[in-house]
Length: 212
Image (cartoon, rainbow, N blue to C red):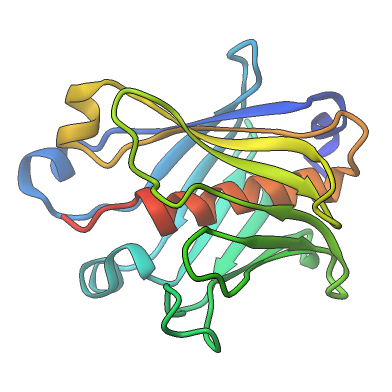
């Protein structure tokens, strides 16, 4: 319930809200986001559920629960990220994300071991790979977007994209509030569209969330 609209879209835009307390004090607050369609219509409101100690101690690698809410503030998706290592030095404890809806797991996102380029796999609950996500060697780009191609399970073709959009010099320099987007085939099953949205948030934390 609440995810039916995803069947009729092939793109979602995610804008992180700027928190003034975080800007002026450097104290990491709970992240909040707005998800819209390509026409700018608000679809979901997203809130991070972590305590201040977790945010302060673990920074960008922190475990989290993220709630995706509809316009009536009903939870339609729940994203859970356990505390894991990040980087090629720890291949046995890589990043992962579990996506649930209505109390049931509908998808998984798992980081693959890679020496330089980011690699993630989008899976069904039983672990069957559905999509692969790649990325650039360097995730920093001045005055340009950073693209993470979404590939078919066999990596033979590109079917979508997760993009971190350039937000302007002032916002990029003084805040860690990001604008991101995800595109996918219109006929992709709804659960996998929702899981790709979860992958967007995992990528946002892994590569673009900064420790204040």
